[in-house]
Amino acid sequence: MSAPANQLVNEQPANVQMLQIISGFWISRAVYVIAKLGIPDLLKSGPKTAEELAAATKMHAPSLFRILRALTSVGVLSSAGGGRFAQTPVSETLVTGAPGSLRWFAVSELGQEHYPAWGNLMHSVKTGEIAFDNFFGVDIWKYFQQNPEDAAVFNDSMSSVTAATNEAILSLYDFSNFGTVVDVGGGHGGLITSILKSNPKVKGVLFDAPQVIEGARPKLEAAGVAERCETVAGDFFKSVPAGGDAYVMKWIIHDWDDEKSITILRNCRSRMGANGRLILVDCVVPETDEPHFSKFIDLNMLVMTGGKERTAKEFEQLLSSAGFKLLRIIPTELPTSIVEAQPM
Ligand code: SAH
Image (cartoon, rainbow, N blue to C red; front, side, top):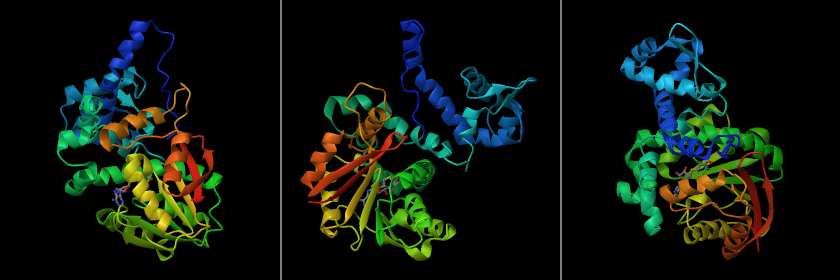
């Protein structure tokens, strides 16, 4: 995930700029439709008409045509003549399984659970409560337990977006001196797999909720790292596995408010030796007005989880409340940074 062009202000007259902003979600939802239907996969073999694409996806051809025409007008697709639509570099990012593919991210972020929660954004602003919980009557993690298909899409979206950030993390942080690295809330194991693959002497522990761990084991086996990676199911509010020299948490702390984050961090702290390292991978919000993706991921946290993105100062305070000293923040070229701490 490279930094998006989130500076919308451009050369257009102010009212045109505002109309582009207001209609932004029309584009997003149209993108959701083609991602969900796998249209970019179908365009891999060459341009196709709306009728051909509708037949392949069992959709209503005249309506699908309108979606494709609109997306072509903003450069997501292109016209190939004869009423056929063609792939562009932008639609290629939605091809299933392409490195860093955004297909499942688009389906998850714009589909069943995130989108209705965003529709309820005003509730969070009014009350400070989680818009998702207010709309669905359960929290997102319970929702995923009850809706395995949406959970699978979310886990796949995390794995593919994670793939794009792993390389940056591994090139900037040296894991080779750790005996055991514990990935707390590691999902299906994308990050721990990359760490183990590039550091053959390191052992791994993947820790997550039981239903997630169940899905992770076959992926670790397929990646050829299962022998060096233990899987542990549990609840990080109760405890995390002992014995790690490093505890990695990628996109975990931003899911929780300060109180809950401190509980998770203290649970890591209590399992760590004095020389252990805590490695958080999360956005660090710049304190200036510059465009930064973190400022909108922060809104995603507001509506979905009740968590937030934090500034460097906020990380330092949070870590110190949980018994950690902030050592350094290593920015990557992506919106995500590496925050390294050690027990105080
Ligand atoms: N670190 C992964 C996944 C981030 S999504 C990545 O970067 O791709 C957040 C993860 O936290 C999910 O996998 C979710 O199952 C896990 N999680 C949420 N609540 C948890 C809990 N109480 N105990 C353990 N894991 C939990």
